[in-house]
Image (tube, rainbow, N blue to C red; front, side, top):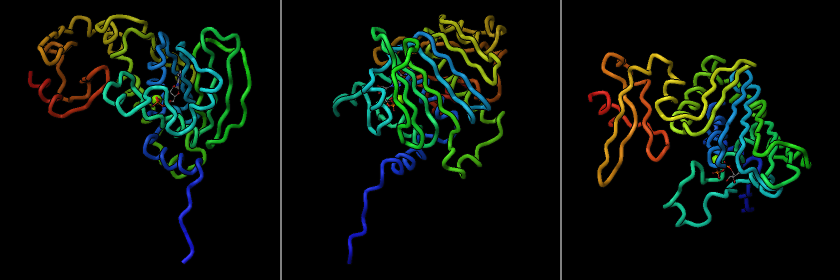
Length: 271
Ligand SMILES: Nc1ncnc2c1ncn2[C@@H]1O[C@H](COP(=O)(O)OP(=O)(O)O)[C@@H](O)[C@H]1O
Ligand SMILES: [Mg+2]
């Protein structure tokens, strides 16, 4: 019988992989925010149109990328964060798989603007459906801006099953909280359809919680601090009178990564 196996073209392989990584606009927001944090940014701006269905833009003032890296970052398994299998045991970045940008670029129109601090000019790259459509030298601010437009434009079934704008925005804001709460040393802003939804200036953790959840929390927060040989636990819990029946407002982090764990969530609730 004739041979029947073929290697899938990159754009199809990327589109399939994207199904795992990118479920909705909030997934793109998470990946872009995490990349900006890994890039050592001190200011990160998130701009949305139509709950991310039309535009998700993340602008940072991090280390930026060289021209070659800017081109490479859209390839699958392209990462600056690990080099060998041993590195997997000492990861100190949010990402390391090198999959997010390749996935996003397979299912959206993406524009990247980036400039390293010492470089006179930066680089602009336009990619759609995994194909590079334009690469040019440009004047741009130090750091990186990714604009992701028309998510799922080439997968109509996925686009059709996105939820209403308020629901998708809620998912995005949840991802924004999960990153912004713990990285209180970074200034975050969030703009949606021309409105400023959040301005979170660099601050301490308590002030960050108050900036997000409202001034009334200022009086209600109790500091938690426990150091043992194995683990150190720190953070804030609300006084009993502010307790809610739901677990919705619990945010637990391990090594600055948001985690969800029923056992821990219930343990905190019962305290
Ligand atoms: N905002 C950014 N600033 C600087 N470099 C970036 C930024 N976003 C992505 N990169 C570069 O692109 C690479 C690929 O990103 P990504 O696909 O998210 O994979 P990962 O984060 O797992 O490495 C990163 O390893 C990094 O080198
Ligand atoms: Mg990443």
